Amino acid sequence: MKKYQSNLFVILIAAFLLQTCSLVPLTGRRQLSLVSDADMLSMSFGQYDQFLKENRLSGNAAQTNVVKHVGRNIQNAVATYFARNNMSQELNGFAWEFNLIDDKAVNAWCMPGGKVVVYSGILPVTQNDTGMAVVLGHEIAHAVAKHSNERMSQALVSQLGGQVLAQALKQKPQKTQQIWMALFGVGVQLGAVLPYNRLQEGEADRLGLIFMAMAGYNPNAAISFWLRMSQKGGAQPPEFLSTHPSDKKRMAKIVAAMPEAMKYYRK
Ligand SMILES: [Zn+2]
Image 1: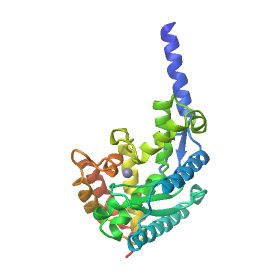
Image 2: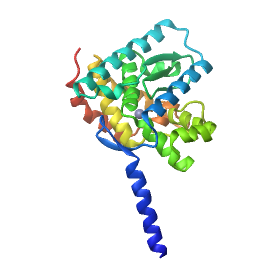
Image 3: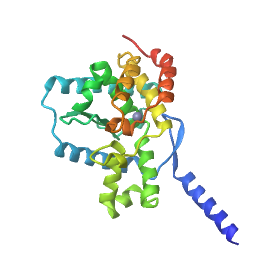
Image 4: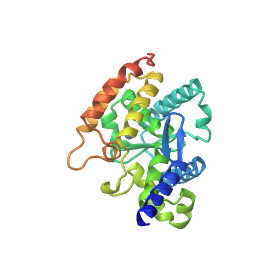
């Protein structure tokens, strides 16, 4: 009887997970989804505005302009890519925004719906427009591949017993917000950061290279960017490396993805 019960339990859990998995058109992969797109966008826009209120925008007009200018170019490339693949409706509800904040942390992220923040601390690693395109292409790829929906869902399972997002926000707003911040390496202890997994990194690398190439930036620059970033590692890796863990295997995959990306590159 016990065995029967435990089998039944496994079947119920499997059925639950299957039901809550949704197919993401961009990746062609089923992802665990305890969050609706509408709930993710609503939380994202609220958290983004809150973040901008609590942090200081950069006063450097030239550097801010690089972030906004390169950001718009990547945004346009993404729109073109989605249109070519008949997926434009996937970008519905996006409200793109690009901001540079004055903060020495080495970090950058794109919250769902196209809400981008770059920290001034990453500028010595990006070095120029093409380096910025590597970062923005990669971060925006995570956002359009809905990786945060997947990571939020996994965290809701592991930390809040599988509550759906809307319910978690009502019942445990503070905890839910903490999980959200941990997804982007924002204001949390580095140990609490929730990194993207290998599969998500691979998807963001490949798509990010394509988006930057379509926007007119040479994707080969990604290799030297990640080498410079990895040199920032060590005992206390920056936020950006904690959320986007890198290793030799990943670098090899980036190199392998280059010929495909170069097909999209127009100088
Ligand atoms: Zn990443």
